[in-house]
Image (cartoon, rainbow, N blue to C red; front, side, top):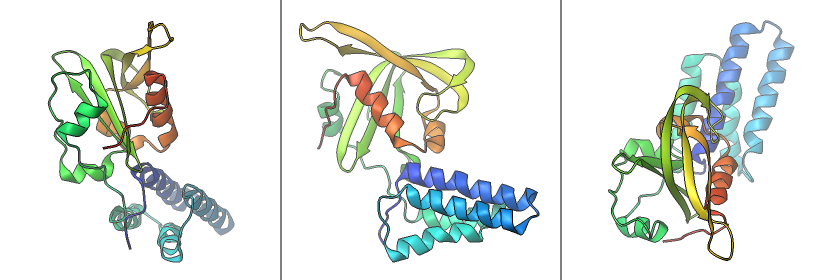
Length: 219
């Protein structure tokens, strides 16, 4: 069976598996437990536009999860079917960020590709942060100034209460070429953010809002 699970879908399933584990630990009524299992099953299925019989059968194994060990085994099996973040090239980055003259190609450990819905990295010399995402072969990217803040806050992308920073990008807002600054608070740690990101729509909307358009790039 070919990979069919996007990273954000996998992270959503991981959270649902934890709900089942918690229910087994805290609920004594079998009817309530069955209701939780059915609800989780429905929610997992709903994040996919369509599933074939084999894919559906695999995902329904979430009903058999009872404890942490069972959850880890289930998720390990699913990991084989996660679509990894695509390999990047220097030419691709030049197309997406044509105004950036010099930057290093970010290093990505191969095992991390199945943890990434987007790639985020910082240029510490310029205090700029880059965000790069890909949907169905279409690439989107944005960069801006990134200023970490001392107090924890809510990340715009993953909605976790964590260490954040203010990401601000300049965007051409009017036909006469005037620029405005747009931004929001996002995680300082992009890998951790990815591990909590269950809704790719927030990421897509954030990048497009900062770019001021719906432009997509394709290699």
